[in-house]
Image (cartoon, rainbow, N blue to C red; front, side):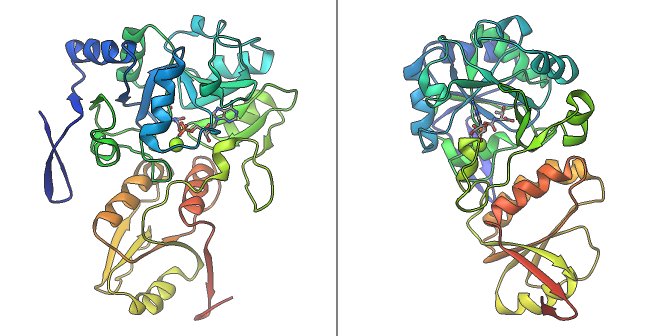
Length: 349
Ligand code: TXA
Ligand code: MG
């Protein structure tokens, strides 16, 4: 099938669209091993893969995404035996994390070996390695046989793709193939944790929660706030990410009253909430249920879909930071560029 629908339109794809059949997975692996770029599903988001040991293939990723070259890539594996040649040492903390959470939505940053090209590590002396648990991802990685460098398969700065059609929206004609494996179950990118030094640093909250990490490691430092002027430890964190075209505001306090008062100023408003209120008729409402995992799985799709509807502004309800909500909140605040409206008693406070 060479056609993809997004919104109301049908597009003919220039990029090859592949299924999850054995034949198509073998085709995808052959394209990758030949130096090509292949988007594939994982349990977090779709990844844009290239042979991690081939520096010039990896450089194509940066070009296709418009990604700054100082932002390192995660290396994906299907077998734990692949790790030893990619890193200098698998220390005790790394071992504990692998045992507890691999395969799964967690990237472990360790000191890199000489096998990792500098385009993958963006000049750092470390590399992030992840074994995904999505069965299609594992079959594809196994068919490739080489470690696969893969960032999220979106244009840099856009929300990460949780459907193959999102990848096509951003990268059609710029990459060789997309494997369509349906919707990603976690829906937010992996947890990134640096265990290359003594104190483990949580660089990006994700599918494996802070609570789960501290249970396994004891002390973990939160290192992902990126206030202006502070040097982020993970290069990717200094770029604005996950942003739809419409400005996003995170609303704290009286959400419904804020929306009712402020939506008057616009023709079309996007609203992301778990509340059940009746909002004005110019609001397009994305309602998440009280299950945190389901909000995490849908946030990026909500942002893309509201953009597709042409809303001028998005008001999103603030949520707590427990469990997976820490990651959802982190992506939401980034999408908002940290624009927060504190609204109580009919006015901003
Ligand atoms: O869930 C995921 O992690 C997805 C799927 C495809 O696996 N991949 C992904 O990759 O989100 P990307 O490139 O969009 O985000 C990787 C993040 C970036 O913020 C990058 O700076 C950070 O991980 N990172 C990668 N290697 C690092 C390293 N050696 N040290 C510090 N941060 C690193
Ligand atoms: Mg990304």
